[in-house]
Amino acid sequence: MKKFVIGDIHGHHLALNQVLAKSGFNFENDLLISLGDLVDLGPDSPSVIETMMKVKNFRHILGNHDKWCLNWMRFGTIDDIWLNQGGQKTIQSYENHKNLIESHLTFLEQAVLYYRDENNRLFVHGGFAWDIPFDQQINDEHVLIWDRSLALMSYNFELQGKKLGLFSEIYLGHTPTRHFGQLTPIKHSNIWLMDTGCGRGGKLTIMDIETKRYWQSDES
Image (cartoon, rainbow, N blue to C red):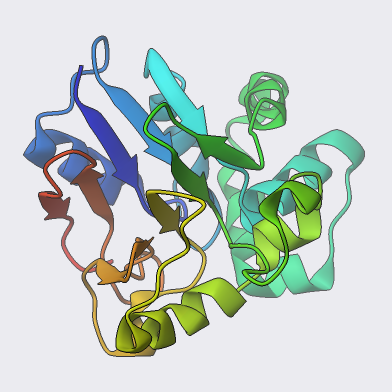
């Protein structure tokens, strides 16, 4: 089994197909960890979810866009901020796929706030308050989905030669690497930033967790 982590996809099914093909991902045997935000911004959110549902060994970390979409599917909730952040495209994309909403809601409800693997690697969408014990935050949905402080502080950790010793590695989505002037994954200390801007003029990235080799889509 190979182990892969993928950044924020944001409804770009073509980009998803590209990186899965380039990496040689095996739907039956390999592990895929999504850092969240499967939906919004792009035109093909239903197709992205349909593809992920075919992955036998899949770990879905809940992103803020996934949460907005889940609330819409479950309660009909449509927040203005969601519409302005790509939710309108998701609603439109389901106009011709209303038959998929029930199964996709079930799929999104199975997402977790974080995933910690057998090698003590942590995968989370946003981050967490680095100066508070992690165990005190494991049920804080808002922090784990929305936090950017860890990503933004990671550069300082690198400069100071520090790392968060609680985990061997930490993988984050949510905060695009373009904030640091790059469209490729960034490693600061033991923290990996994996949102390389798909849906926002950047690319989608998938990485082999063991070898650190990565593959990217065309610019979205």
